[in-house]
Image 1 (cartoon, rainbow, N blue to C red):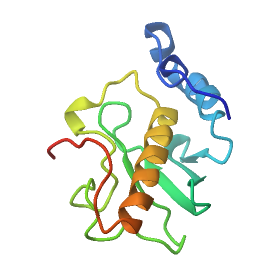
Image 2: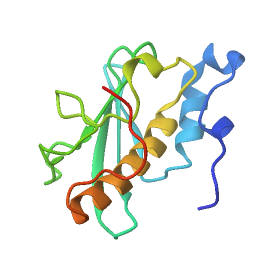
Image 3: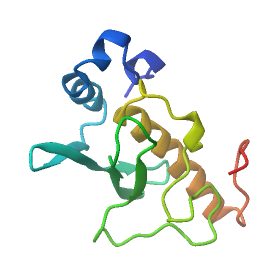
Amino acid sequence: MGEISSDQLTLGAAELLNRWPYEQQKLRLFPAFAFLAKDGAVVAAEGALETQYGNRYALRIELNNYPFSLPKIKPKPGSGWAIHPSAPHQFSDGSMCVMRSDQWKRHFTVALLVAKAAVWLGKYEIWKRNGHYWPGLGQKH
């Protein structure tokens, strides 16, 4: 896959008014992901990402109160993997911390979260291999 630009992962003002067709279009950048609906409402997205080491991680992005609050990114239930309890950059509920809650903006998309999860997983794999040192800069939680 080629480089993805930030405008491919965010919505413009007009797109916010009817976001789901645009969200679906942007999520196609990650063909392994799909939206899940319950009772006619989109409640989550699920899919898998492969890291630089060839490991595959199945994820679930829970869209509670979306797009007004940061969705939760967690291992997909039943997928056989869990985030190591000592891993940094995770919230107290075990979801990935790809950004602080106060950094979330309504024009961000699920596709942006998938991209951020891919970066998080890449760093997580390095952390597991190098004696538990998280690469790159971090932010206080």
